[in-house]
Image (cartoon, rainbow, N blue to C red; front, side, top):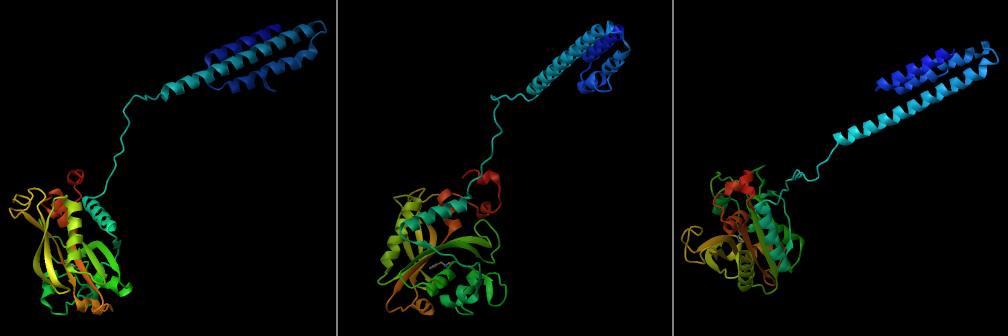
Length: 337
Ligand code: PHE
């Protein structure tokens, strides 16, 4: 029996030394209820009273030795596992990180925000109107009746006979005046549409920013002062503006407004095409018919309005020579802003 116990111990030790897998299985096989050591202890009844304590003590020693070996082995395995994991999951904090690419505002959005800031600084509010508009607001209320030649230059896309994609932001003037009584001071940026073929200076979709001021005693000098302040903030302090007589059906008198070329200062260069001036907007005093159409008495109130092309202003400001660049989403272009 002593020999059996010694054999069990030797076998268990040998197995533990060579395994890397399941020690629990080994424990059950030797020390469990149906284990080999337990079987030996059960047979102790057949031993003589003198032999019993000797074998019992040896059995206890064997059990303790196997238990200690199991504990040791399992500690060893846990340590090894941890070390393996630490080696595997090593992190080099000195390696350069994967940089996250940040986007930024589109140049048109940036220019629009900049322009909005300038006008908000002068007390203007921002007004919005629909891009899908009634013929009435886009043309008729603005003193452009059916068959008026001014419609030719603003040919647009029709949804029905009376509904179209707005060809200018001027309909927002009418919508604002219908809803608010003077004093009115609004700008209205947004998309407009015209059935123009796409080339370096034309696009069937572009952006405008409308301005409208209506109050008692508003004169042309208010218009000039407002636009001059805008031009200096947008293009630089030495910028000058120039009014050229023009015609719009919804303003009287009307003008086209140029800014002195901010590249050459008026001498003439490539950007201003030798002119010294760059046209950026149309403007004028709100026509009495338009005030009347909106329920505002032209005997009491007067106002001015202007409308500028956002693309035109942005191209002028940044020296961009092709309008198509704004819409092509070419990163080589966009990254420059
Ligand atoms: N809506 C005009 C255009 O698109 C510009 C304009 C606006 C002119 C307001 C006068 C007053 O050409």
